[in-house]
Image (tube, rainbow, N blue to C red; front, side):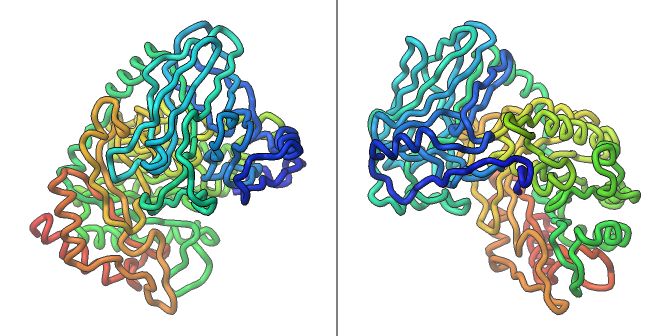
Length: 530
């Protein structure tokens, strides 16, 4: 999304990333004087007294060879890691303002191959305090790829302005510059250079209180474990009808009004799903129901028909629960305009308030009839995290009408984003679901405070059809899917599998690939016994 398009006239200096040699004197001057968009520029960060403050690496003043892999642009980008740690002069320095003098617990989020990490020692300094520790070597083969490292020593900060610096003292050298490429979402096999994501600061007493509040709010998802698996469908604005024609986003009201709930429920029952995760706001910020919150900002994106209520009732006749997926970033400019703030000091507070109000309205509207307003909140790790959002407020809003609503902030490649995320939510694409080791979920583990869960697709997220035929095929054989579901069931890990669905839901044509339906009927027999 180009959230600042035509908003700010700013000169962007292209980072020269093709060379990883030490900068010359003239290059250093240019590096220091470069002009970047205000979203990416260093700033004084206000530490919150009773919360975790997350600060991205790019918010630091970068010296030496440090750089962004992608050229800074006036928008949020996924690949916002800092790379280029080759000498002790490659230093990141943040400026923070503390509300009072106190000790802060420090966590660093970074990634790299174990070969790189085993040779990396870093130093964190502020005032008279210097902390030196070795990087953690990952002893797991699954996600998360980006780990959280809690420093063993706290950092004492004075009241007011403090400077915090980070640098490497020993280095795992990359063999080739070509290895410094974007971290791939679908693999952890290729070695990555040391890449820094963010720093988190919180007072230890406040951190303990946060974890206690989160634990008290935890949803009981035993019903998902007992139900074994659910169905994920993408009612996505970019998907096309079975026989072609305008995309869903171009005829949203029409296709919502024509949505045949009975035809949909019939297929869900055949599949044997114990819940349905239904996408709302994917691609654009249209909403398949009434919404005062959305209408107050921009009318025309909601519907008079309450499709969500009808799905709750239709599925409920078969003891199937409805969960909602929501993407708070995709197409948000259509609804909220400049999502991440205007001018020289981007301010996301209005965006945060909209999300909190929206989650609360939906939760209160449907109450306990809706399993959750936010079972899958997308783009949490890649984009929302960068803005240091109020996770606790979001979780409370999602649970306002149903205290036992499970909350899932999508972390993707990252460790858990917040103690207020109830279960693991990560884009599994079509890959075989990972069964992550138990120690990751234990106290102090990378996935602490979460419950294992898996989300993946059989034949794509959104449907692809041509000439009245589904062009996407299931990734694996019937036998392989049966094996996948049985292993997950044995591990007590609920699976939510996506079947690509046409946006025109009617009995006049198949809404799912019949081949995928037949596979799921066999999975149902093997896993559920009927």
